[in-house]
Amino acid sequence: MRVLVVEDDRNLAASLQESLRAEGMNVEVAHDAERALETLRDVDVDVVLLDRDLPRMSGDEMCRALRASGYPAAILMLTAAGALRDRVEGLDLGADDYLAKPFAYLELLARIRALARRQSSTASPILEWGSLRIDTARRLAERDGRRLPLSPKEFDLLESLVVAGGGFVSRIDLLDTAWDDPDRLSAGVLKTAMHSLRRKLGDPSILAYSAGFGYRLEGADDHVHI
Image (cartoon, rainbow, N blue to C red; front, side, top):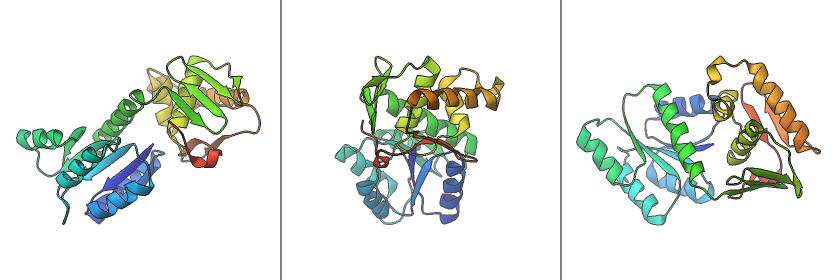
């Protein structure tokens, strides 16, 4: 998952970047709207965390600009104003969700994940990553034209990795993706499922693991086509 944090409070921005990266997300940071828009010209992101009270160009103006341009990322607006009228105004601007400061990090994380799932569910049913082709509507996966005999959970795991576009997906996120009650599962369950997925994907191996970050797909010039 790719996230852009647009926040002029540099300490908060750095803290969010570090925390979200620890969850396996790819995180970019911009301290003003102008820099954020420049970043979005070069990088596709899934979720924009947008501070409403930015210097020069406000978060409101940036939100309007993104929606007017048709940029597809979900927008989670952050603001110190938590009154009902402020929340309604933020949503009317085109934001997908709204969170008042100060907020609990776990709530922010849950909302980011919910927005990313919503984005994924509205995307085209065909995902491609190098030689991989996934039909999310029919739940079929192929590599080099060869049908992959994936179990339902293996398909869910592979889809999550492809959507991440080469970024790391944490073990927690993968467990959330494929199991209804991940808190009751051991790390060995996911390890076994990923071992099976790696074997079914075949050679050369494109599934990588890094301790502390999670799993990612390698190759395909690090671009996913949706």
